[in-house]
Length: 325
Image (cartoon, rainbow, N blue to C red; front, side, top):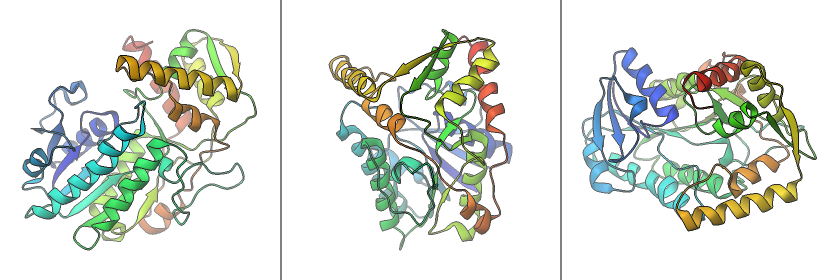
C-alpha cells in the first residue's frame, strides 16, 4: 500500500507515518514549505511540499498513491473563515485531486468528536447521532465530513472521529500541563464535565484498519478509551507524574468566556494563535464530551486498549524531559 498523509508533520501525523513505515509501507508526506518537520526527523518517507488549499500541489501529491490519510487541519484561529478554508474546503480539494488521479481511491478522513458536538453527562454519543457542532472548529469538521461523503460515489470514504487525543509530543494539551507544572490546577465551576479521551497510538490503530478493511467504507467510527475522565482528573494525573501538588484555580463560565474573547482579540491583532480562545472555552464549558467505541468493536473488532491514565503520565514525563515544561 502506498499512502499519502496530509498533516504528516503534526502530532497524530508523525505517529501514523512512523507506524506505516514500521509496517513496510511506502509513505508520502504532504508538508507545508515552512512547517516544523521535527516529527518526521530520521524517517525514510517521501516529502511532497504543498498545502491542502493548493490544488496543484495536491495533484502532484496524490499521484501514484492508493490511500490518502487526510489529517491536515487547523485547531486555532481567531475567526470562522480560516477553519472553513482549511478544514472544509481543504477536504474538498483533497477529494477532487483524488478523483482526478488514476490511483488514489480510499480516503481516510480524520474528523473529530467536535463535529457531532457536546454530549450529555448521561449519554455518550454514537455514530447514529446527527452532526450538531457547537463552535467554529466543530462546524468546519462537520462540513469536511459532508464534503467527503458527497464524493462517496467516486471514492471509498471512511471517517474516524477521535475525542481529545493524548500522547508524548502533543501540543494541544501542553498548556494544561504547563499550568500544572507551575503549581496551578484549572477547574471550572458547575462541573463535573465528563470527557472521552484516547491515546494517539489507539487512533493510529483505527486509522490503519479504516484504510485496509472493506467494512469501513461508507462508515464513520468514534475511537475512545473505555470510561471517562474530567479535566481536573487529567490535570491531577499530570501533577502526580510531575511530583507537584498544585493549588486549585476555579474559574466561572463568565470569566472564562471573557478571557477567551480577549485572547481572540490579541490573536487577531498579533497574528499569534494563543492557547486560549473561544473554541477552547466553549469546549471546556460543554456539559460533556463523550462518545461510544461500540461500533468500531462490532464492525471492525477494534477497541482502544491503552490506559489513558498511563498515557497522561507518560506525556507529562516526556514534556519535562524535553524541556517543554
